[in-house]
Image (cartoon, rainbow over all chains, first blue to last red; front, side):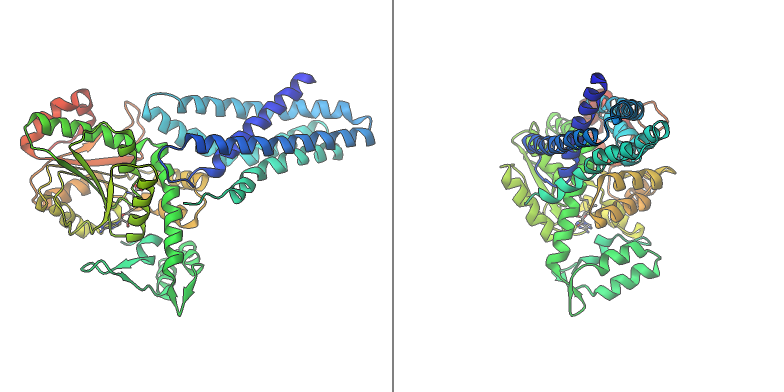
Length: 167
Length: 304
Ligand SMILES: C[S@@+](CC[C@H](N)C(=O)[O-])C[C@H]1O[C@@H](n2cnc3c(N)ncnc32)[C@H](O)[C@@H]1O
């Protein structure tokens, strides 16, 4: 249970960081902007943690209301992870391609993997929830999953609207 | 220009004076509708206007946001370093051939000047090399100069028409510009290279391929937010010229260059590159260029 919770936490943190990068990508005309991207990622991590803390509080409240929910949540987390970890693994592979010295390998990993995977993120998030509900069909599970993925999916747009660059 | 981009129609310049001309919103909307491009018509209809004319400030702000978004494409494809590599080989060839410096590199249709700003930020070309970006859109030129100042880069940007260059240029480059020109005017574009004493040129643009419509849609939808950038990016890839058309136009221009095309495939893979390039070098400089490029020379094909 602890391992699954840690894995979900790490996935949420990684997803928030990438959302932070995407939120500002294509908004700053500078050539050297590492610090700018780092700041954007730091802000996203902060907001990502706000979402995580609110989720933990929400789950605690639900567990207090439905004491038998814990086992179902543990099982559903397992099933969510089956989908999310596969997606995460492929994303990490693509990101590895992006660190290669060859410009062509970097370009291919962007065109063939990172681009399509960005588009697939929301459907994959929903698939993870559906997969969990398939195994654990319970309204409270849907509620917990929704509390987690809806704000995570909206994080990029929220950050983009909040932190528009001026130039 | 059967498939115009939004940016081709919402800004108009007098080709002689370079003066900005007013643009009638309804005419542009109508043109896109008649071409069956509802999405483009919607974007143009959404631009603020006064007395039926598009408001220049609104158009400029939209263009600027789009160009800054487009910079991401060049960043992700490491385009700055690709252009710099070719320039380094050409400059090395000029130096061993005793061509007197200073050398002037001009980026035609530079937009907000990413390529030359990238090269200026990374240096290495030599103090005897002057970097100049030229574009007929003065808003983009003003922005490019401002962005260069922000990072104290040694490069300047100036308003100019690629078909009537006001200054001499040792090397002419461009990125994503050729598809903006009508096929019938490509030869005139290359002829201009001969007129301003250019020793070499390299023009990068999208490479047509059967995968382009889907690939380009995917890339732009996943990367871009600005509707103009999305629309024009996808359309650019669709109207790109084949290497044969570009080489033929360069030959028709009668300007004396040895002509080549950058390897259209990705290494040994049967995958077409997103961008290809057509290049010209004065015939007497070819041996020096070949030796300066070393192994890289084999990436250039179809020399004629
Ligand atoms: C797709 S943008 C490419 C901008 C830039 N090279 C880049 O890679 O981001 C095409 C540019 O060509 C410019 N352009 C089109 N026709 C031109 C002409 N005849 N003379 C100068 N610039 C031109 C446009 O103003 C626009 O900035």
